Length: 80
Image (cartoon, rainbow, N blue to C red; front, side, top):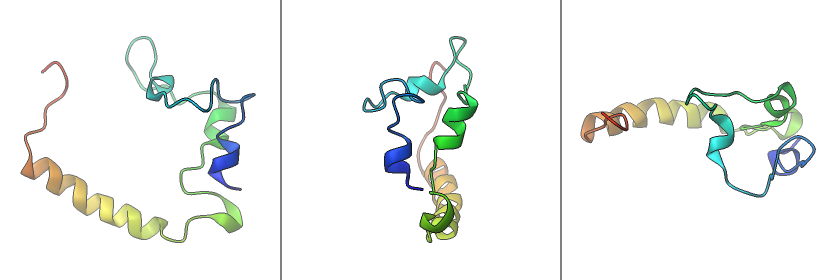
């Protein structure tokens, strides 16, 4: 499966062609994982035979890079 086609299914995702990060945020501001169908079709790394072969390396790089960025720059929560 490839994310390009599964994440553009309008029967699962409302207005799939629009970039809308707020679709994952509830009214009270908490994280909303979406419906079970949305979670099943959100394929960040792909699935099956078409799964990203660089997934493990990318995750390792993020674990190194994110703490370095937080250490190097002043980071605060919005509204703090």
